[in-house]
Image: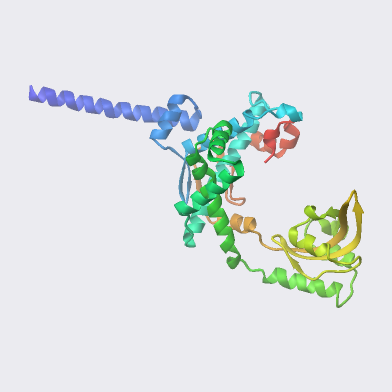
Amino acid sequence: MRKKEKFKILIGVSSAIVLIFVLLGALVLAVYKYDSNSRLIRFMEKIIPLPALYVSQAGFVPVGEIKEDFAAVKKFYESQDFEQIGMRIDFNTDQGKQRLKVKERGIVNKLIENKIIENLAKKRGISISESDTDAEIERNIAQFGNKERLMSDLARLYGWTLKDFQNKVVTPELYAEKLAEVYTGEIDTAAAENKIKTLYDKVTASREDFVKVARENSEGESAKAGGDLGWSSRNQLIGEIAEKAYSLKVGETSGIIESPLGYHIIKLEEKKTENGEDLVHIRQIFVKKTTFGDWLKEQMKNYKVIVFLGDYQWNPENAEVDFRNADLRRFEENLDINSQGDPSVFP
């Protein structure tokens, strides 16, 4: 009898193990091959955090996190009344579904970026304390007027709690801000500084034509027009440029101005007052410096990313995930044409 009981127990345990593996297999198939969004699958994903991606040195991104963020973005657009501004959203059409897929790719890349930023920050001794996040949330509450209004808007627009907001927005942004504060010590600005000094000498000591120097040496789109930026109001210009431009006399050239984008030399061509607003017409010679975004992109190229999702593949040259499907890649390249007035295509 004892042997029979043990045998029954063994059979029962074996059956349970087989059932578990069958269920796990069905779950994996539903998630990775068919991308199921049923309630049961979403519930199982919370219990078993299947990986969507693995970022070397930084860890896994679970499938459930991508789906949660995707649902929040979809809810945000569907909760808006865009018809008042002559725009509409329809995610049920074939193109609407493709636009949603483009949004999902953006979410996947943002989660990878957040993982890498946090890893880069921690390597540099940066940490985010509970008091840091509490202070940032208090600032957000002050902007919304009160805590209840913030919580109400989060729930209505994204389906989030305050804790979700902290984990998905506040903490990643704090890591990015603190990392941006220290990255400048890791970039070499010598080449850009030497170039702008040489160009400054050309238009001042050597008295070379500003337009000619700008067209031949300046960086950015304005170089094609000899550095011409056209007419601008104060609030249309970068703060450092505006401050100097409005202090110059017509025909006068500035010294070297440093901004978050790089180094500038500006010349005031004209100024006028129009509808009670002071406007300036300036030209610039511009030399780009490595921005935080440039630096971060190069850092991200040092990380290996393994993608378990069938729709995506890692592009190490651009440090981002791309669609495997060529039709989706072409659709995204022509997103403006395919938007049909859909505001969801705008960042």
